[in-house]
Amino acid sequence: MGVEDHKKHAVKSVRAGVITLSSTRSKAEDESGTWIAEQLRQQGHTLVFHQVLPDNGAIITQTVLNAIYEQTPHVLLLNGGTGASPRDVTVEAVRSLFQKELTAFSTLFAQLSFEEIGAAAILSRATAGVIRRTAVFCMPGSIRACKLACTRLIFPELGHLAKHLSEE
Image (tube, rainbow, N blue to C red):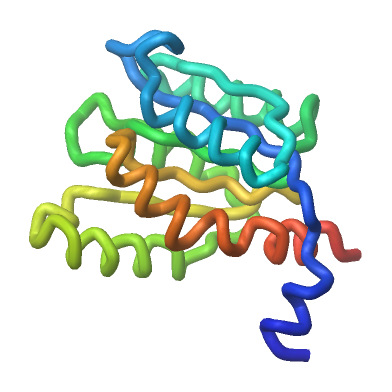
């Protein structure tokens, strides 16, 4: 069965969670997370939660696990904390939880970022993987990076990915 055949059987509406990682922004100032949440709703998906958390590895890990076990989303979209500074701990907090890593996301995001911002793309550690039956995407926190990741890579495959993760 080809990709187009698979997409015909994709989940039409996914359950999604959005987590913004920032020690300086509140939910009212969360441009990226708010944009992601609104786009999900506009595309007919169900937003099960939207939170802003501090850049704290233990809090991130616990919140991701609680969200997956309590809300059972098809996808978690994390933005922020994927850079190279010491406070950027999202990848470390989440990667060890992955049962499978979606390695192409990092590669494709880096390629698209390079086309837009040049060599500064090497500073991003965007990553994705699967925890239980939930796809987890970690992307930079800038609105531009979130729009790039979501519109070019994540949103076009949400239903297709959710279908595969729900298979026995």
